[in-house]
Length: 159
Image (cartoon, rainbow, N blue to C red; front, top):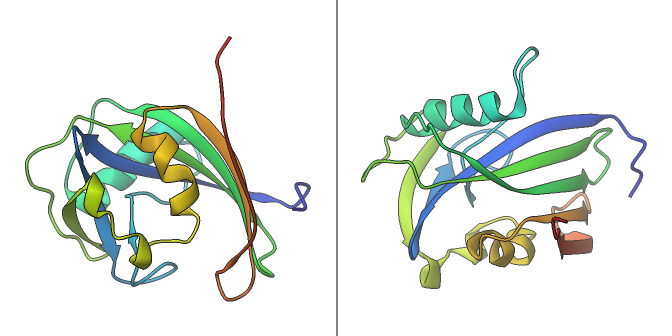
């Protein structure tokens, strides 16, 4: 992975309580047709946390007040000129139902029934850390067909 490439800072927020998570079916744009968390680009003047709250509300109708940052992942996607630096958040602060938006169709899943076959390939690597509430970091390199060439995820142990 060429870590000197420019970076696009992104957020991903996943509502998670007990044995359930909310994911959204991406309806358009990059990642369409895949289940994913709720998130997107950090806008100029926003903190990463502010972007996570804004994107969660835009995509699900849910304004969260509590976020727990669990991970940071770097993605190199084929020939794309930028690395994606993804900041992953968990929230337990959400209603019983989320609203569909132009971009996402939310659905609740039991952890035992996660739709990994319809998610990004990398999710299988980092999701166990996320679900266990562990802090983690990782790096993924994808080819131009969105298949993993290299993958590494590790727990971050705070001193």
